[in-house]
Amino acid sequence: MGSVEEERQLLEDGLSQDESYGLYTGDGSVDIKGRPVLKSNTGNWRACPFILGTECCERLAYYGIATNLVTYLIDKLHEGNVSAATNVTTWQGTCYLTPLIGAILADAYWGRYWTIAAFSTIYFIGMCTLTLSATVPALKPAECVDSVCPSATAAQYAVFFLGLYLIALGTGGIKPCVSPFGANQFDDTDPRERVKKGSFFNWFYFSVNIGALVSSTLIVWIQENIGWGLGFGIPALFMGVAIASFFSGTPLYRFQKPGGSPITRMCQVLVASFHKWKVEVPEDSSLLYETQETNSAIGGSRKIEHSNELKCLDKAAVVADAEIKSGDFSNGWRLCTVTQVEELKILIRMFPIWATGIVFSAVYAQMSTLFVEQGEMMDTTIGSFTIPAASLSTFDVISVIFWVPVYDQFIVPIVRKFTGKERGFSELQRMGIGLFISVLSMSAAAIVEIKRLQIAREFGLVDEDVAVPLSILWQAPQYFLMGAAEIFTFIGQLEFFYDQSPDAMRSLCSALSLLTTSLGSYLSSLILTIVTYVTTEGGQVGWIPDNLNEGHLDYFFWLLAGLSVLNLLVYVVCASRYKQKKAS
Image 1 (tube, rainbow, N blue to C red):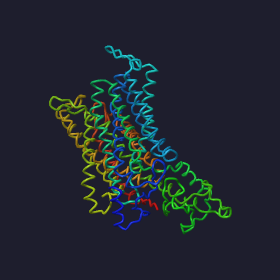
Image 2: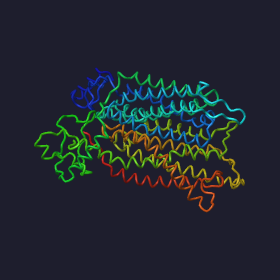
Image 3: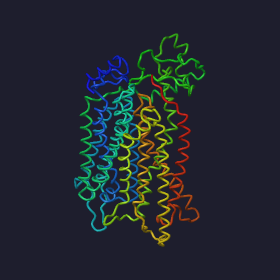
Image 4: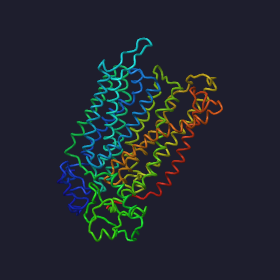
């Protein structure tokens, strides 16, 4: 909508420029030079194509490396299966830990824009280094001759892993910042823009999966059939496109000022409340310390209203007699504002919701592990084509690409009529639905395995480590259901950790939500280790032997389904008790 039309509409509505529906944003956002921004000229959907384009190209670059990395390590660097798998999982785990670094830098010092810009450059350098290591003959080991495969030299390993871990570091500044930065383009104080922000998260996740789909099909095919130099070079090129797309939108962006170190502020609340542990907290919360200015003392943050939970932390905001006499309220290690105290309270309240995401991530991790192993023991031929078991994950991506527009354009408007909520379902309801669907996905996988084992018995294949005559396409429902669970739980998490986090901690909370993916993988490994130990006692074959025809992989899937049910019950209790953040 143009500025003239907007002004006319505002006049018709009887709204002044100073109100939250006015010409200027009401959430403290500024332009790149720190000046207040007009709604009509900045942010909103006009800025989002650049951010969504950046995310799509960056995810294409990431998955262009990650999807087939284990194959490169085995076939080109001549590593063993165990060594290659260990290197891949270690690198992927690092990619989900480094966001904590980028988040702290963004929230405390640089802001999201400059953090994305700096780490994107590191990312691009890493991609180019990786491409060179796969292209220049001196930087990679010679090809195998018969069964003799020369090992990579220390220098060749150094160049390859330098590029790989520069990429891991680069993701650390992009992952926790891009979605909050995109959401910053919508004014929190304007109900009309809040609705659009909910839609943004849907299309953000859609762009992620478009990038993943291109990588898992076209890029992998190029790597396998044309060459790894080109296979790594194309993702590097797209990373360059991502950087160009991001900078192109600069004049349209809305920016939030960094608010200083969130870690320091939380420590100050703990120290101040401990120092005043004998102090009585007044019944009237208005007597607690808060700045008199309209905005919070924390840069880039609105004030947060006082809540009645965790009153022990309110001691940090009690003004002591010594502070009243001296008139000095500047020592943050002795006196904190209500907003600063509420920041810590919010993180503590969010923790149980965050923890339930770990079990969901453990279930999600099965797509790249046991779902693939199950598929390899099924009939992978369709006519004259042979489908790699790992390629079935494409059904998950297709499911997400299908469900995002369906959810955004059809489900939300319908549900909104019944709930009256801007986004149809609340973030907590949306996440809970996703957790329920994940139970269905595990149940579908277990049912397919029961049928597979039944056919193995009928054909006398139990003692033979061969695939059974059951089409791998029977796995499609479990992948499709997992994709549906993603668009509810993962996108719900994006919304929840953005909306409910303190304004000046949004990148940090985004990084914490990403951490559940890493912890979920570790939990999956732990459960698998325990199950293997318990079920192989006394010389038993166990649930998951090398020959799956002898085992009971269905029992493991039922176990995960049961854990998911328990996790869902815990989530329902935690969600029902959760108190929403109230920003003034």
